[in-house]
Image (cartoon, helix red, strand yellow):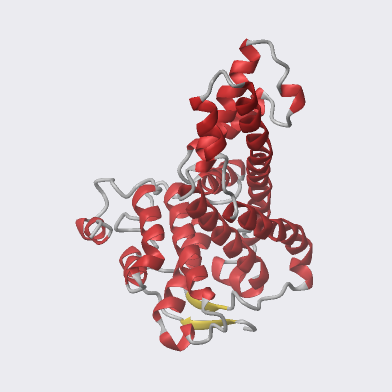
Amino acid sequence: MGNLIKVLTRDIDNNAGNFFLDFENAQPTEAERSIWEQVNMVLVEAMAILDDLQSYKGAGEEIRQAIQNPNADRVQERAWAAVIPLVGKLKKFYEFSLKLEGSLHGLLKALTSAQSSPTQHLEQEQALARQFAEILHFTLRFDELKMTNPAIQNDFSYFRRTLNRMRINNVAAEEENEVNNELANRMSLFYANATPMLKTLSDATTKFVSDNTDLPIENTTDCLCTMASVCKVMLETPEYRSRFANEDTVSFCLRVMVGVIILYDYVHPAGAFVKTSKIDMKGCIKVLKDQPQSSVEGLLNALRYTTKHLNDETTSKQIKNMLQMN
């Protein structure tokens, strides 16, 4: 089994399998290495992206001064000079989302192929499963940081307004900065979403399923529900939770569990909350609620506000009640 230790062998709540997956130490086999190296380059960049986003301060004061002094050229120039490098960062974040989409497709292709069951894929390709988890962890962390930083939307809105004003006044602006109008439109759609990286991943997973018509949709949904099951069991079983060498692995598992639930909810026609769902939603929500509230409120909100089927009539009242704000 290597780093992947079977915890339970019987079916529980229709889940395909429950495992302990070593998210901390899984290393690629020779068969995995080609995909792993491609994805690893993207994941290394992901860490730098999070650092950049965490330190993003914005140009709020310069923008406020510019709005209050519309005829003061120097104040306007100061605000524009402050916003331009920030928009360069926002461009980098947006372009990284496209790289992430490509990496996700590569991992899904490996982890959902018809050669093995989802459980076998996790057993035999632990390093790729770990990378898939790391992409989900990055995605939810990025969106948490973005949602709590209004400067991102404010800076980009000011940039677009100023760019439009320059165009109307025939001032050469696009040639002088790296974001032209077409790219600005795409970035605007990206940042207008409350959880832009999660939407990128959801759309990419849905596209993967529609593009690979020879692959049964169950290959993808079973992979997602198995991963949710893995995380839930590790988190609710003290014997296995105690194997984590790093306490941060708990928050990592929580984010991954929520991420795969949301992807499953978008990809599966009936969603994650229906009674026949292969994901034990009540168990997953209970695991979240058993953690300190401050550490999981953002994840509970992700289930409340970024899923597709929570408010469907097919969702039980018990699940809706469990997710209600206290």
